[in-house]
Amino acid sequence: MEKTKYELLAPAGNFAMLVAAVNAGADAIYFGLQSGFGMRANAKNFTVNDLDKMREICNKSKRKPRLYVTLNTIVYDKEMSSLEKIIKKIKGKVDAVICWDPAVIELCRKYKIPFMISTQSSVSNSESAKFYKKLGAKQIVLARELNLKQIKEISKILPIECFAHGAMCVAVSGRCFMSQHLFNRSANRGACIHPCRRTYKVIDEQEGYELRLDNNKVMSAKDLCTLPFIEKMKKAGIRSFKIEGRNRDPRYVDTVVRVYRKAIDNRLTKTEIKELMDELKNVYNREFSSGFYLGLPTSDDFATIEHSAAKEKKEYIGKVIHYFKGAEVATIKLVKDLKIGDKLVIIGNTTGLENIKVESMQIKNKDIKKAKAKEEVGIKLPLVRKNDEVYLIKKVKK
Image 1 (spheres, rainbow, N blue to C red):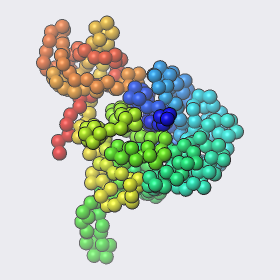
Image 2: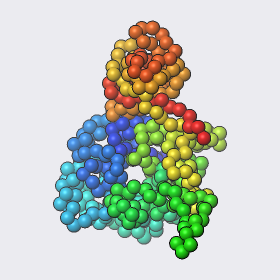
Image 3: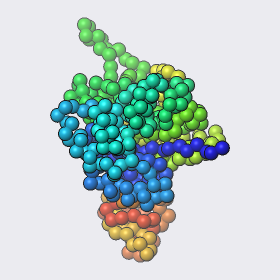
Image 4: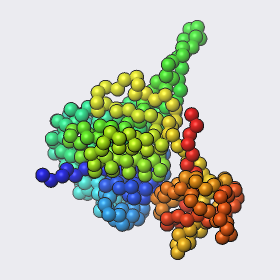
């Protein structure tokens, strides 16, 4: 029997994230354009002129990841001309467009560009899937409100893509108007500023009494994590496993892609799942939930923190000012102290991401055990580049 081919779909909000995703083993990358129409307007995003370079980066890797551009926001009449210009320019440069607005779908059909249906379309039944299949959709990102039994039925229609890891919106599939109402920043235009993540209290307007809530993050959903039941996801007919996180950082992308690469390619033991869960807890997260996959969420699926529950954090300590390829040594200009045994992550647009533990350091060819801020120190490293940023990885004190 031929082995089922799964797709691991990773986010990229800039070149460092793109390279990190490619190196970590992604099968495909999804991203937005600075020209708009993507659901993450706050990410740095890419330009149409970047597409050739992005393809070059992907083609250098063994997997040769596919490129999917997101054009999945609400579109207005006055924007149709701009939208069509973008679609004409990306023809032949991307593998597919992720969309849901019929106007975008029609333009993709007009210019013969493959398209996939975004979760914004809230596809939650087989008839809707058949409708989009007739239009020519290659794949569908289902509504987040579905459980695995429902997904299995729809997967009989056409290839199914589902979110496997990352942020969950309080409106589940992203159709929230809170940011628009309070700050005139529409989530459905990719500009959400996430007021749902904040702390809230209940006040009696008549008397002014204030009620204390057991969890004052009443609208902040925990992050989705499907690693513990990834085999059930496979059995449900899911073919593409999508990681959320275009607004997160390269270290998050590197860690999450590597973890899910192992889970998709292998049947993990309970011990391996526990070890990989510990890795996921080291990078940005708002605690973890199974979403709707195993049943309806409860009050336990809401976060107890506003920002990150990660067990580790990165702290900027300097940048690479020179790299000697022959010796494989980087010179780093420090802004904070560094010592033997410290864990570092180096991030750059071409480098992507490199994790290292400092085994030795030198200043003016003399071995040292500790370097101080403002000093220039030599450290043996894999290939990095001038101006790459250097971060110290530290345990978070609870």
